Amino acid sequence: MLNQNSNKIQLKKCKELLVLLDKLSNCVFNAKIDGIGAIIEDRRLGIETPVKINFIKDDNGNNVSIDPFDKLIFSGAISEIASGNTTISLNRLFHTIGGVRLDQALNIKAAIEQSLSKLRRTEITVDVTALANHFKQYAAQINAVPDSKGQIILKSALLPSEIICAVVNGKVTDGAVILFGDPVLLRVAEMKGQITRCNTNLLAVPLRATEQTLKIRYYLLEHILKIKGSHDPKRSKRVRKLNTSILFDTIFSYCGLPDTKWQKQDFRKYISCILDHFVSENFISGYEFVKRENKFYSISIDF
Image 1 (tube, rainbow, N blue to C red):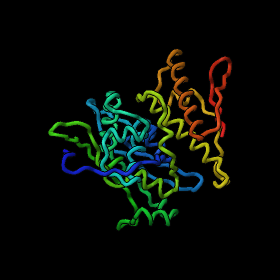
Image 2: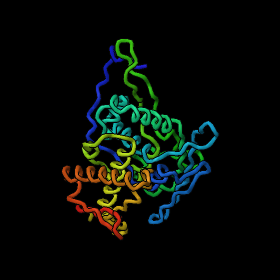
Image 3: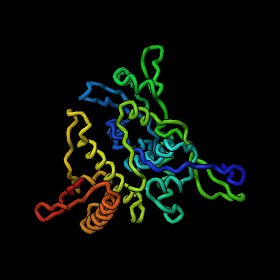
Image 4: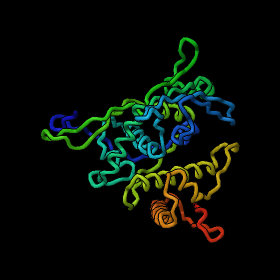
């Protein structure tokens, strides 16, 4: 337990949110890798990256998968690491991902604790030998050193960490998490240069923070970052430009949202609120809901 009476932790302000845009992270957090493992192929570079995940088990012995909400929590945690913070309260983490007061969102607190537990107990092993040979400069920066067989294997928990309790005047108050170094996924994304940063204010949407609304705002943020990145004139001409439209069905499917008509109507209101906030932060210049056959089909994003 952490006693806040004796040693107060001085936290640095987390102004930037780190978002990993590489294929490995996308596969991990979208349940595209099972317990057997997978080969992540980069066709543009001609590189194959073997990866294996050692999942934790539920009461029935089934793998507990990693999902998009875990990616949001992971993004908040690595953003704090990048800011120089290694011990943060759960309330601070909630604030970093766009929340306000965790004591007013008890369901979210339980979801955050469950996500952190999954991330610290799920182990990932990545063979980055081919990547390190291609990105030699980046490999040196993250200290990717070959073993006796000439292989470079990175292995750790998805989020090396420990959950603790904060104690004030002898009473357990807020939970906290201790973060141990750079996670494997962060090191791989750094090696490939596929990390982007944005202002944390973009997630501070004036909207009640629930697990579903948090997933929606993070999905929209990440997808728009990918679109903007693909249209950056500084990017390689070999990088395919992404369509500036986002399908409603893709959002609902990715975030695991209910499929009833009235619930979709509510979530469209949430999406509109989030995009209005993005406009006010000059992240996008505008947007339009597009109908097809008298049904809401997609969102056209303007920059």
